[in-house]
Image 1: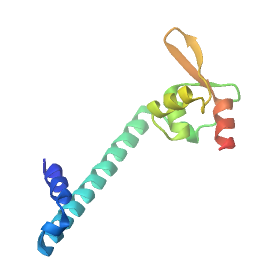
Image 2: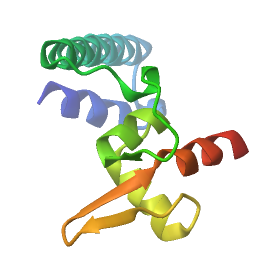
Image 3: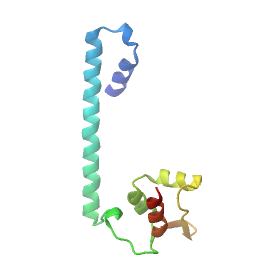
Image 4: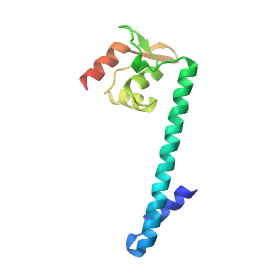
Length: 120
């Protein structure tokens, strides 16, 4: 709600605003940015806490044996991007193709992911 108001106020031509109004809008925008940063940090903390409680370490910290097939979630954490980005890269041909292990499941060869990372 309030964010939309701030965005609307920031879109108004600055030539039609007084200096006081511009400073108020700037402060309101800065307040919203600080609030959003706190929320992002809170969500990261919650996510990390869930991983610890589930007993899962991030794949980036895990040593995979050569030839291991890994899930999309492990690929995402290893590479540091979301699922949609991985699949977009696959479609574009800029990322290793997955291996189909069943009708509804695919995995990636960790060797190919590592080679892709080193080639960047």
